[in-house]
Image 1: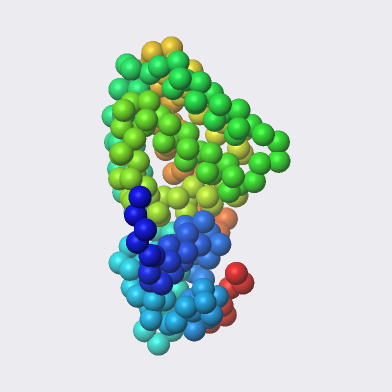
Image 2: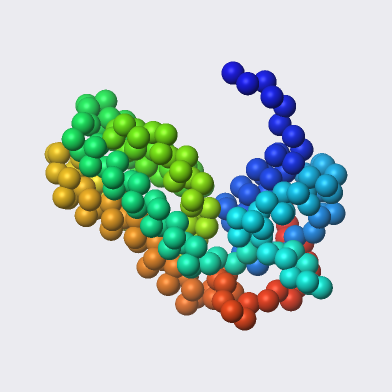
Length: 233
C-alpha cells in the first residue's frame, strides 16, 4: 500500500473535477482562482494548475477578458464518450453471459435491491448505477476496463446526472437494469445486448429534452459567458 502524500494540486484537481462532473458546479458557472483557493484552503498555484488540467479535459474554458468558466455540456464529447463506453461494456457483456456465476447474479440482484430503496438521493442512485456497471464488467472478467470507461466519460456523466435530475425517472432506469440482469442470468446474449444498448443510449434522448428546456447548459458556437458571480459551494 502506497503512503505517498497527495499533493495540493492533486487534491484541488480531484475536488474541482468532482464538483464539475457532479453538477455542484453547473455548466457555465464562473470560476475565480482566489475564491476557489479560499474554498479549498490552498494557495492559488495548485488551483491554477488544476484549472489548466481541467481545461485540457474540456471541462473548463477560458475566455479572454471575461474569465474562466465551467464548460457547457458538449454533445459531441458526450457522443464520443458514449461510443467508448458502449464498445467496452458490450464486449464484456458477451463474456459475462458466457461465464456468469451464481455469485455474479446475486451481486447484481443485490445492487438492484439497493437501487429500489425508498427516498434514495440522485447522488446515491448514481453511485449504485456506477457499481452496477462495474459489477457487470467484473462478471465478464474485465474489472480493469472500468478505468478506461471512467476516464472517458466525464462529459457523459454530466449529461447522465442532468437526465436523472430533470427527465429520467429512477424506476425506469431500474427496469432497464433488471432487463439486463434477467438476460444475463438466462444466458441470452442477444436480449442482454439489446437491453444494454437501449439503456446506455437513453442518455441521448435525455440530452435532447434537456437542451430544449435549458439550452444555456449546452455548448454552441455562440455561447459566451457574461456573468462574474461565483456560485455557492
